[in-house]
Length: 138
Image (cartoon, rainbow, N blue to C red):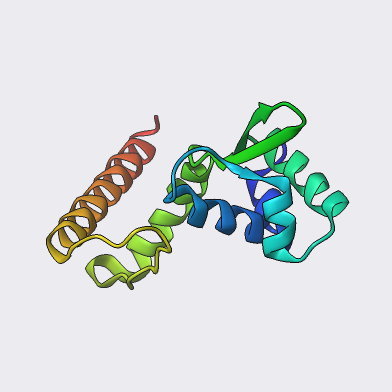
């Protein structure tokens, strides 16, 4: 499998992922290649080439409907990146980590605060456990 960091290093692929993320809040029917081409202003062959790389790295899924293909974001591989980045953020910022803008549907204030608290606690706990296991030689 291609290194996920190599895959997302390309700006056009990041643009496609961001577009699919924005569209994922509208429903899960997927986004057609034609819509991606139109939205990004990139040629169809270029979009298809990048979608192939994203498919092979399992960052997107495809649904076929006759001659048309509809793409959706698959977030599971992005958890690898998240797992890799969290220790740096925890070490650098501790409880003072900066807010991260998320282009998805907005949460109400209570839900956003709860999600932030739970997310930071989970990331912190995972880092502590991983670090302890590493020190124990496991």
